[in-house]
Image (cartoon, rainbow, N blue to C red; front, top):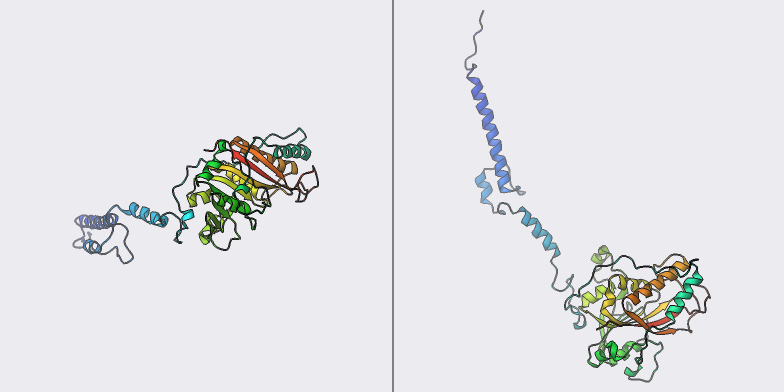
Length: 363
């Protein structure tokens, strides 16, 4: 017995079902195309709203998502002209006037061969002490006392070479001399005052200075800054934008100074790492003369290794100076200081020497 088919459920129902599925698929595809063309909806946008409503609210033009990201990133880097903070501009002594060309930094100095096959302290110390006690070039006119306006003798022999062939005397006469003095709480400013009286622009860096920048007298500036062999960590610098610790190269960039005629340093055993930084970053090319007090009673800040290895490191630093055309023209053994060499009473050595070099390629 045949069963009667319900009305409307024949072969004609299949095309209507396919038509409905195609219609739903087309609507979904249309909505996806709308979203792709208008960008991601904002917080108040609804994906179910008609296209006319979406276009009524102002929004970015099509295809500008990449430009938006670039804009946001560049906005974070926008800094005030001439610096990285919104602090008041520096005094006229330290305004930027362009940055010097700087070569790529090295990571390590080249260590010299051992002084002898046994690699002993005796061999290394003998070579090192002989090196710092022997001048390498003659200077006929040394001193700063000729610039002094008083009769008080200098307590330390901070001496510069004033021979005309090296240019410092000419720079002083033409009032274009610049001196940087690096110290740690020293009250002795006889050398700095003498050079300022002679016509030099003197910048004394000492973290114990009470104010950020002080002009004591004509040509003599005091800065509350400590010269280090590294800049502060970026996280620390972000929290303390006025951090008073800088590398010398960073100070030169900030002040806009391309050259230093004389660099004097009395850093109480930090001189070895600072000197290493000047070598590795090629800052020495911007310096005419060096006057350093070196300390030998212990290895120095962040200098480690065996005793013979420490002395080899010291010697290698001084040989790097020689490779950079610096020649030792004056050496002074301070007998008023303890006679200690790496905490030992050895080699008849003082714990403190004052050494002066001139850059023979300085122009």
